[in-house]
Length: 461
Picture 1 (cartoon, rainbow, N blue to C red):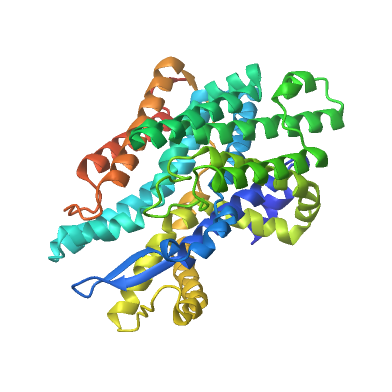
Picture 2: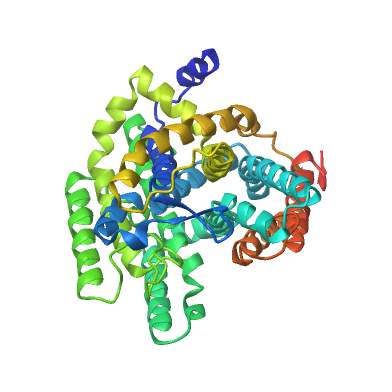
């Protein structure tokens, strides 16, 4: 608690605390949403199985407009990446050093998850558990890694995409949105692979809006301080996100209207989360409808920004936000592992309820289910949260920046390949380690290179 107090006291006066709150809220909503819509059943052999309840709850589809918060995470990611990259360069550091620090914050807790899961899978396989069953359990626990793969694809592009933002401003997300729409047309008329580019274009578009928010915020801070450096930091007006109440209402109402049209008159499904059986998926990959919904969410964020900032300048709310953000990735990564552990424990003692989805018993079980999962997750965060919380920034180093930069990008590419390979490998595949061997090797190689580079390998000075 003392450390949290110290962090709160050291918070810069100009920090956009709303960004930190949104990051914490987004991950919390994802966790609670996954838990709330889970359905536990049994297969032919009597073993527990899990799936989403959404296909059986069409009345809940409009609620996914609130529950779909991944765009918010990319939005605040864009803001935070622009802020940290700018600060790094102001200190004389380079983009490679910044990228390696970002890699450490993202990969240290991820590596802990994968190593623990693979270790447990190896023990289970040696104990005689079928490899297909081992894979199914690990597959479920690693579902959160599909999102991390998308984010790790966007992060190393930040130095380039932020330069494009500084040059072309809001035209960049507009162009990316056009590409997303083209991808949607392609998958509507042909195979799903025609829209694979939307995984990059869609999330990049939202990430670019985070840059625009940062430019608007840094411009306002510089103007308030009457800094002579304001013109260089804030950039041209075309790079700034409008933060007025009028702009907020415009984005909110226009985004909602466009989303309603696209999901009623247009071809897009109402649900903004994955629903097996739907002809189109709004989230995987991101669709035009998801981007219009993002516009509405951004409008609401702008409207609430000032009152939320005033509230977060109170000590207690800000302490809570700091505490959550210190382990926010750990919470996200381990929340489905918590579900696996709880299901296994309840099944072992014969107390696992499996009521039909949508029934009164299933609805009544939601609250105790979430509360029990919260306890299990709290234990996991207590065990593994310090790995994330201890990750700090290393001193800037100089050296063969071109070689180091290329190696850093290669490390990211290997990690992204590993996470995608794991995500697309069938959950029934016979994998004694739970994760495909090729994926595990690629991940360890990529993460190892990034760790070596951060420790100073390939640098001089």
